[in-house]
Length: 143
Image (tube, rainbow, N blue to C red):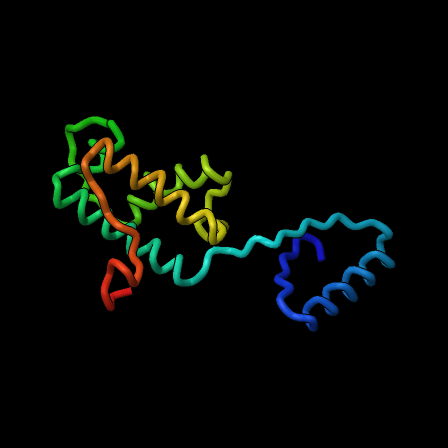
């Protein structure tokens, strides 16, 4: 079970994990276990994140802000925003500062709204760019 990650979401998977832990204990007489009850981000959140990243990129481009301007870099060369650039240069640094996790796959369901709020507030206050989070209420039938 070295470095193994396991989701226990049923009585059967719980019993299997307990048996595996017992076997490992009998073998090594030592265990270190870390548990969490916080769920990983949902597929809907993941889809919404990537849609929002693209929407931010499109809006920043529409308003004429290139990556270097937003990141306060040299204004000599324009770099057009992409969803990947928004994720790498805006979302990921805020996420890492917020929860210490670099990968968006490590974010929990409660992390996404908080990180979005931080980023959206900053974009709105500093650049006048507001992009709502994609959801049924503000996307019509697109979400």
